[in-house]
Amino acid sequence: MAVNPNNTPLIIIKYWIPVIFYAILIFLLSSIPGGNIPFLFVGQDAVLHIIEYGILAILLNRLIKKQWPVLMSYRRFFLVFFISITYGISDELHQLFIPNRYCSGLDLAFDGAGILMANIFYR
Image (tube, rainbow, N blue to C red; front, side, top):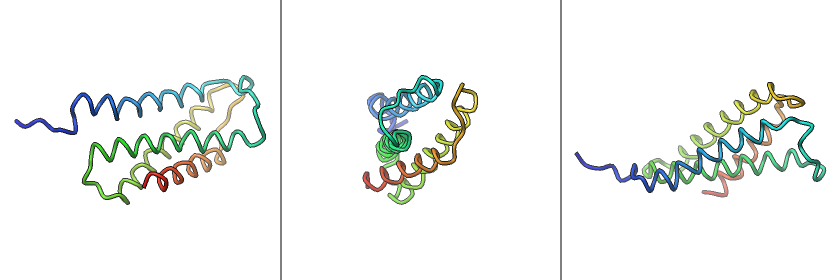
């Protein structure tokens, strides 16, 4: 049986692990109670959501492009968007259980904007 070159330990370490660790980081940051988040500047929530999910989209793009190189770029675009926005939805729902945090459609829109910008940038 031939070894699949896209499942080597190096691929897993270099492409899968960053996505998994970053998703865990997002979850941990979302677990910080609302009163403990420092105020840095006006509009920080929007900017941080865009950056946070833009990075997730770039990491997912790297992973999917390496793991499935024959996948057409527009399909990768939609797959990355779907995975990232689904994680964003789960993150917003998770915040319902965190003191002084809430589920926000506006935050999800900023997540989507970051995902779209990162997808376009990565292309």
